[in-house]
Amino acid sequence: MLTLEGDKVYLRALEPEDLDFIVEVENTEEFWEISATRVPYSRFLIKKYIQNSHRDIFDVKQLRLVICTMEDAPIGLIDIFDLEPKDRRAALGILIVNDENRGKGYGAQALSLVCDYCFTHLGLHQVYAGVTTDNLASIKLFENNNFEKVGIKKDWILVNGIFKDEILYQLINNVY
Image 1: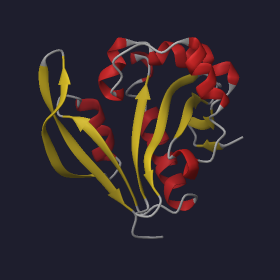
Image 2: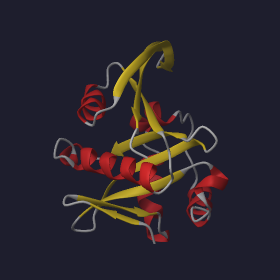
Image 3: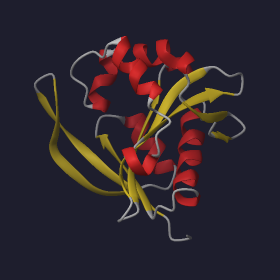
């Protein structure tokens, strides 16, 4: 089992017991904007996804990890996706599910842990993320974790009939 641990949170692989948590997250319309989801997912499909989550990241080009407090409570998800092994880069996405767990440093530590994993274990040269310009918490999260704003994609995301701009952030690892 993959475990990456800090002093506030740890990251772990998906487990069958996460089914209800993942179903709730994937079917919460409020989160669809950040995940490009447009329709609900069935329990059956999510169960199959969890059953296949053991597959190698270099094969499936993605990895989803559960963010847990040190008390073993799942509070969010962090994804590595669009992995490009040849170019040694991948996209990141992070979600802390409930407001009461936001602003406590959980997301920052999870992001730091997953970046370290990407650079040291996956051998990536860079990770990147897209954040809508109105997502101030995520902008602060990525900027406080040394991600550099490298561009803005105009009218990139359509939400409720309104186009939103998306900021592109990169973190390039020059150590490895």
